[in-house]
Length: 319
Image (cartoon, rainbow, N blue to C red; front, side):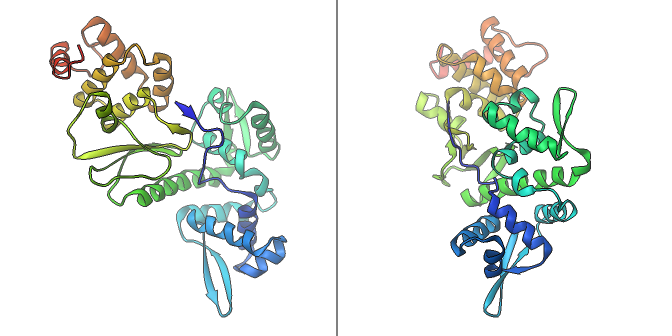
């Protein structure tokens, strides 16, 4: 797996976008007036407005010779408008942009303290976290960071906004896609076989990627994993995504076992287990390695019988 040094995160805000939203909270305002109030060029304002429209937050409407900006009526737009209006004294243009945005998003979605520090460099993490805590937005509860309960609107916004952005990305990729799993800004989708996706950050995965390794599975669908943090997927990722298609399905489990068995010497078990935690698959992955070592399934985890697996393995010339 190769991580991107500067991953493209289409949901993150920049300072100009937040400054515009704070102005529009006060009143519907013209594009030209925004430029004057913020001291920004027409191109800077236009680019920021384009991104805000893409995020489902604002609309522009022509009023005579001018264009006026107003909030969209989407649920996440209503929530951020309420947040900016209710807590107008807080410098959200510093707290909801770039690294701070990413840290808050991860806190809202329950990323634990240890993993949270990996979101950005240690220096960046602590600088932004101290700023968030200084304004009372984030508290340390026990060993984990939490959003202050009085900012429940912020929590609701992040959840609704995340859902909106994922659905938008999926619609843009294919109007026939089904979301099988999602978390933060990553998701697994299924599309009809003939509906190919060639957009950046969409990676062919699971059984759709197995064929190039000699495990060809007939399917009416292709599977894609969207991730802004990875340039490409690894064999370990293919296995995990196979298990995500339908948790506990013996058919998908069997093909994942075939893949593990064929490439056991190449796979990183530690990476598999680390990533499996994010998907809630750690117990399943551990059981699969035990199954291959002991030639029998553990009693408390769904797996094929050894006879069933052996038959399929011989069919694919894995054993």
